[in-house]
Image 1 (tube, one colour):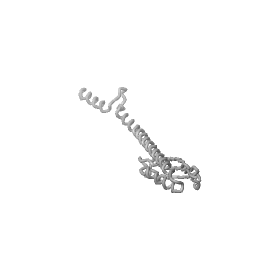
Image 2 (cartoon, helix red, strand yellow; image 1 turned 180 degrees about the vertical axis):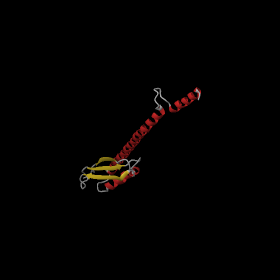
Image 3 (cartoon, one colour; image 1 turned 45 degrees about the vertical axis):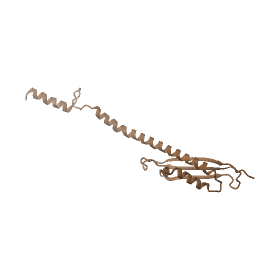
Length: 164
């Protein structure tokens, strides 16, 4: 075997094994491998933050829609006389305004309607209190993420009727 052939074999082996400068037989680490590992570690963290932000923003949007519906229902139904079915009016108004969000609420939207005041004397101010609760389930992985409890309430006075 000539020296030239021996040098070629050693050169091929050196390129194959990628000797480091210190002379050890360990292969050099490439930046591509480090980037792949960092990507594999970072992507789940970034995606979970992104999805969590989306869920919280959508839950806040749903709470705002629920609050708007409750205030509008209290305002609309407080004009009615006390004996003319205010709870039914509130229920129909709220459920009509949050029909899309009602499907996202586990068990639907629960309403609590209270009337404070003297029902027999129309000259006394009565207050209509409306509270709506919703256990909001996430649109992203609804079974994996816990429900977020949303609550909205409003009070609206009914002005006394002028009369004798």
